[in-house]
Length: 306
Ligand SMILES: Nc1nc2c(c(CN[C@H]3C=C[C@H](O)[C@@H]3O)cn2[C@@H]2O[C@H](COP(=O)(O)O)[C@@H](O)[C@H]2O)c(=O)[nH]1
Image (cartoon, rainbow, N blue to C red):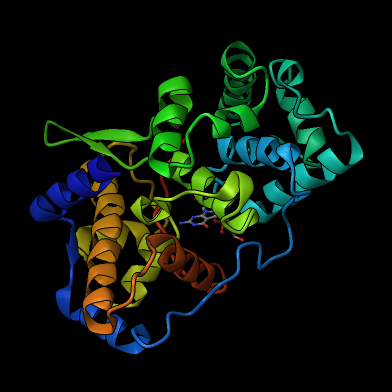
């Protein structure tokens, strides 16, 4: 994920709405360097797991739809993960590639037992179709074949996913330069690694290459921790629940500075403790503290990427 690291650093060095605060990073590192708070994957107990290829299919569908929950104040990631789990337990063929290509908005809503239209529902349906079609065309309908063909490399998996599935190509153009964040493609690798506990479909020799997943929770947590500081104008948009345009400088800076700041945090912990630290572990710790923080204000961008 060198391109995610390099392009995020590029944005951080030119950023004007979001500042990465070195003293904030040092403070956080001081408090966690001796023992990084370990958060278990599926600490919520909401994901499907059967130790086999169906779990891979479930995680791929989950991460194809893992974006934009905030426009509906009652909807959260939990509903998606547990709704898809219940649907699969009820009908083992629910995520077969041919069926993925045919879902309509109301059918997806039904599957998730959600009583009203989902945010960006037409995009969610389009992306499901894309997943079904390309899985059928190139991977005999199975996400497990996609994972098998990456040679136990998370970097290769992200590259394969973004090559085959345009909906996962999470990137922006910032000051004329292409910036890669690949949130959902990277989280798919991390979800496999977490669910299968680094074995079988979750075995990746390069899991340390994955960065954090730039969503709307982690930047808000980093700000609370004093690691990110916002311009007055940006702070006021977030405070008043204003929308931030997808691809705007503000949005790219929020996401890229988060990736960059956590990479700096990781490097500093490694220097101070002499131990290897995974961005995936830092991400889960930061994200889980964010979702347990009911008054946390996050930025609002309509996006299919996160
Ligand atoms: N950085 C980061 N962002 C993550 C996740 C996850 C879930 N990961 C699972 C993996 C293992 C655990 O057991 C988790 O269940 C979701 N999100 C993002 O959060 C937002 C949803 O928030 P809210 O509207 O409050 O539900 C939305 O952008 C969504 O894409 C993560 O791990 N890291």
